Length: 297
Image 1 (tube, helix red, strand yellow):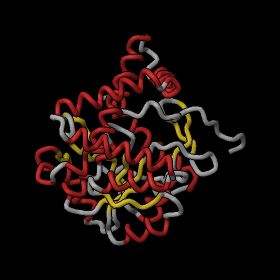
Image 2: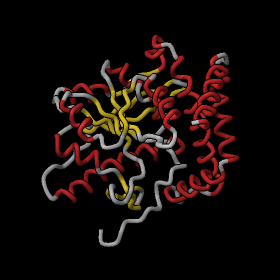
Image 3: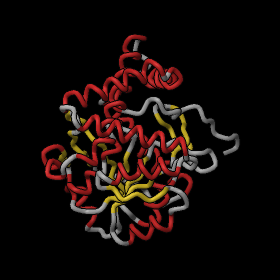
Image 4: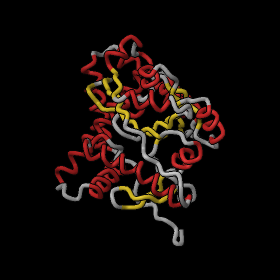
């Protein structure tokens, strides 16, 4: 609790300091944070470098380092944007944020089975709650709790909710998710988190099998809920276009295990496509690879 109080106090002081700065200095501060992270967080830097090499095998050492450094700079920018979101006037939302392919949402809602908005650790996923303002509807997001840091977790969720999200903790939430989908609501789920071997399904991601959530495919197959992949496209500091992709074509007839694998693979394929467009926008510091499938699985 004491550590949480120190961290929260530090973040609040930083918030108030950043508020008095002009926007270009706010952005430069975020970039500076990212560069410091690249310099001092050696473990995460090495993870990111190894991950980029797995995917972009044609990159030389210089290009790999540049991609990782840019990734850190954008993560630093994401952090500054997130802590400033509560102070961004709502009347500026329409100027700063737009939505592309809104018709996919409108058409999916007509089915009256809710929507699973499939999101990823891409660009600034933390501000995706602005979609609720753009759509004029609540967006409910699943968030993994910081179990040992309750106060800090509540503070961070407050920042996320300032964008327009409604947070429900991602722990035994299937009943609540199903209830909200029956009420034709939008549930946002991150599709690229590293799952435990016992809970995930091993699916190809850039040529290697990684444990991926089976929840999205399982729920969609059971309920008929459309799965719409969404991601923010960075257009400047605290300026984004929320891009909505066409509903993923999930198959629902056949062997359940094969279907879960096939449908989950479509999620990873979509993520691959947007990473290839803007490699430095993805969360390379995450240990996405390395966890092996149990023999006989």
